[in-house]
Amino acid sequence: MKILVVDDFSTMRRIIKNLLNDLGFMNIVEADDGNTAIPILKKGGIDFLVTDWNMPGMTGIELLREVRADDKLSGLPVMMVTAEQKREQIVEAAEAGVNGYIVKPFTAITLKEKMGKIFERVG
Amino acid sequence: MLEENKLISDDNIARSKDLLACLERGDENGAREVLDELTRIRETELYQEMGKLTRELHDSITAFGKDDKLINLAQAEIPDARSRLRHVIKMTDDAANRTLTAVEESLPICDSVTTNSSNLHEKWRRFVQRDMNVQEFRELSLLIDQFLEGNTGQVKELRSKLNEILMAQDFQDLTSQIIKRVIGLVEDVETNLVNLVKLAGGHIKVDFEKTKDDHSIEATGPAVPGVDTESNLVSGQDEVDDLLSSLGF
Picture (cartoon, rainbow over the protein chains, first blue to last red):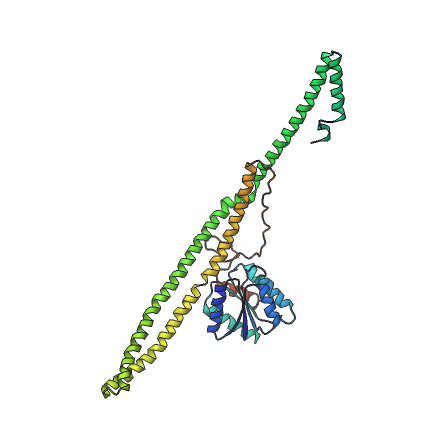
């Protein structure tokens, strides 16, 4: 299982990466915004995408839309981990096809639960 | 300046010729009449220019007074930025304390493991050198058992403290998002102050920054307690989950 973690803050990427390692996911790739994430995704081999919302360049919601619009990537499970907590934003992400939404600050248990649920649903 | 206000014009050349003709033929009244007319034209121009300047000044002062952005900056956004920065202080304080507490709780665990290990090591060495009676060996067996059992729990606890330290670092991302927002506000204040200085310095044409269109779903970073109090905000993960499940997730 190869996971791409997209966040403009390297500290947050490290936190997520460590938590994922703790959950047994050792193969983690990082990108600092949507623009750098897209080529990595297009190269193939990514099984799960974790992304922030608020990033310079391409935001997380734009990245999600790009992923859903791409024939090869449209089925990729995407989880948002973000400080954005407006109801409209959560609805917007849901409508754009997000598989999970975690608000920062979050706990290791939340991450574990949400990932579990996504895998359950995606199969 | 309008065409009719130009000094060099056919009318003015004609008037000057008239004036010269009156003076040459000694017609004092005629000369005075022409001079009065020239003065009147000059005064009209002056009044027009003064009027224009007054109007521009009035417009600029009115625009400045009516500029919502500047009023909003002073009345709402600066106190708002203060609260946001206070929240940043609180978040960094919390993170530092969380980290320090976890370290303070971890150190005794390390000390305990070290003490137990060296104690056991010393006894083990005596056993290897066959310098140990049966009773002492029984005690050593018990100690080894206790050590191995205790170690698992202590390492587990240490791991949880390390995770606590890891999670405490999320403040860097969250506070930076808040600070970036305040930097944006400082830039707004700067632009508006520069405009104010231009206005005071006599450069009347001022472009007041237009208030940005409110994007309903613009990314705004973490909500700050006591500042972001809009009802459209979720209070935490539980509300996110409720909202998503209401949408069929």
